[in-house]
Image (cartoon, rainbow, N blue to C red):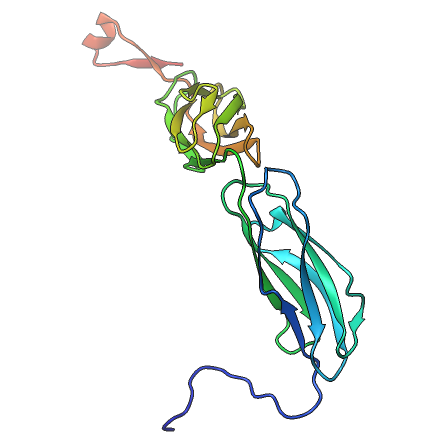
Length: 248
């Protein structure tokens, strides 16, 4: 039909409805040291409708949800015209600029109400690439070429690296990063695989430092290791007979 709308839409009929508004709709926190908590910022939830609002709860969501927290005074319901406070704090557990959402669930139209959260982390920050590495099959007792993991300091201060370790013992590393990495700089750690027995191996490269989220880990996996490389025994008699025999 001409002039029809293809996107879904809602029509609210005249009558009594629970309506809630959350203000402000966005909170931005000042730069914060890793693993320390900011003063709380307040989101006010107000019942602007004509029926009580049943409050189900508030939660933090998104990729960096662990960097934010909330407490509230809203109780089980909110009378017409009444308000309650939701106190939000920022305690960064990751470097960079963490973002998340405050999600408020209730009986009001348009629930959940969403408030956007943003902050910034002081000090060093660490990212690494790739996040995981896989080694090809390799003979037991041999050493393959290392694979490189690149570390980058994404923060605003020098990164202090206190320890680098691999586990289990089938994996080793070559550390070109030293004990410190300047802000904005990158370095590489070479990881190698020296299988001591057959079968698939999984492990981790663990980096301990002064950045948020330390220690950081890189997952490693090696495809099934091969048995010991066959040793070929050659002799003039076997060569003349056109035979070779392999011993393990």
